[in-house]
Amino acid sequence: MLSVKEAQAKVLECEVKLKSIKVDILKSCGKVLAQDIISNDFIPAYDNSAIDGFAVMAVDIIGADKNYPVKLKLLKDDIPAGKVPDITLDSGFAVPIMTGAPIPSGCDCVVMKEDALKEGKDILVFRECRQGENIRCRGEDIEQCDTVLKAGKKIYPADIGVMASMGLSQVDIYKPPLVAIISTGDELVETGHKLSGAKVRDSNSFSLAAQAAEAGADFKMYGIAKDDKNILRDKISSVIAECDILLISGGVSVGDYDFVKEVLADLGAEFIFWRVNQRPGKPLAFLTYKDKFIFGLPGNPVSVMVCFEMYVRPLIKKMMADRNLFKRKIKALALQDHQHKEGVTDFIRVVLEKIDEQYYFKHTGRYGSGILTSMAEADGLAVFSEDKSTVNKDDAIEVYLLRD
Image 1 (spheres, rainbow, N blue to C red):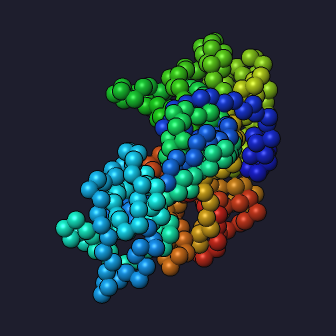
Image 2 (cartoon, helix red, strand yellow):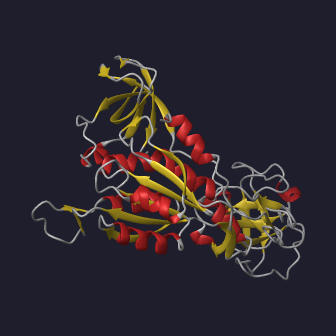
Image 3 (tube, rainbow, N blue to C red):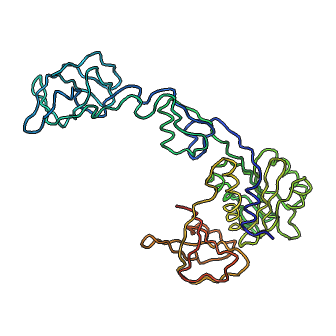
């Protein structure tokens, strides 16, 4: 049986084919650039005022202060944003100018409105300015032909603003994989059904779809497949043709009705591993089929979500060229002693507390792999490694954050 680290290595050493797709820039947030972004323009395209104020010559207002203001003649016209000025500023004159408006010829600084006072047809300037003050110069932000954003960069909101300023409406990103989701089991019913007899609503499809979306992937839910070999074979063979990653929850253990492994083998899928030395989620299968990837996940809802975080998420991120394969990890100190079976890795659902910049954790209080609400309560997954027999109070343990 593989250790967690060995199983993760098996997943991540698989060769993936990066694909690119052109999307609207607003849909690129959180994705990874598949192209260099090179500017065709200077940004800004012209010298412009950084403030509302008065365009002047710096030499005219040398020494100006509150006690000795400098008087300048005020031109009748003003310069609003978006209008190209047709005036030339001469010494001894000032012209009102708005934020973003082009700088007129002859001007080399802009006085803030608050530092001047209108007096009839003149203005009094109460503060001197140096050359270039309050002027945004052409190309100050971006030079023409600059490589502004490089391929491989993760896209954040500010990057989208930069691309918009450069006139881009679409951009090439690494294509998110399509994740297909199937739940198996005769006991399952759709979420809208009332429970009766020994039936259980299918929560796994929804948990996995939400995790896939959070990881940045596209997803499609294919519903429930009954524990019947022929039904499973037909469903899996049709779904695998449409997706990049197939997630099948349930049916991979050793029960009399666990047919998933057998069906996948019949279809020609290649087993990379089955079973990992971990709790929860021991009966985990990972297979490849042509250029597709298949995860046979346990049926218990906590096991499903833990296996997604530890194995599916990093594969999705790799297929999107995202360098951050896992959720963020921190070190946290145990608030109490924990019993742990040496020789197996435990992923423990924990609640975090921060005291004086130090994180502490305690168990959510419920251990069962069928208690899905414990995942809703958890801030993270603490990793009790296989080489530890107990975790004592104040031991520093690695914790994967489930939310920030």
